[in-house]
Length: 87
Image 1 (cartoon, rainbow, N blue to C red):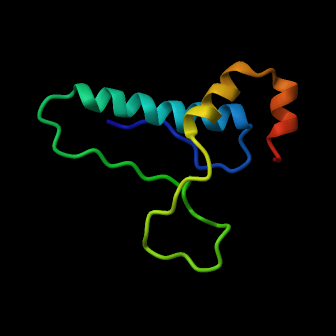
Image 2 (image 1 turned 60 degrees about the vertical axis):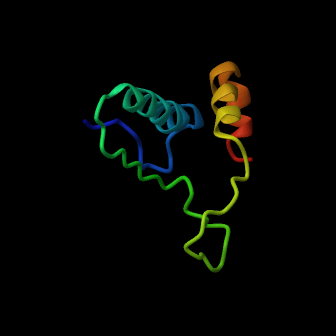
């Protein structure tokens, strides 16, 4: 099974969040329903930690909650999203 996601860094915030956040959420929900599932592997550039000079092999705390981002992009108008995207 393949799940559609985007590795482009110039997608609009709405497109990127729908593909990467909502798509991942839906894939996880689907995986929960599959009997005898032995593995679920998800690879993401979301946690590349490019804000750090040295990146250790540890799990860093998230700077925000993906659910909040998804809620904003699904409930805010396009103009406001365009203003918020660079931030």
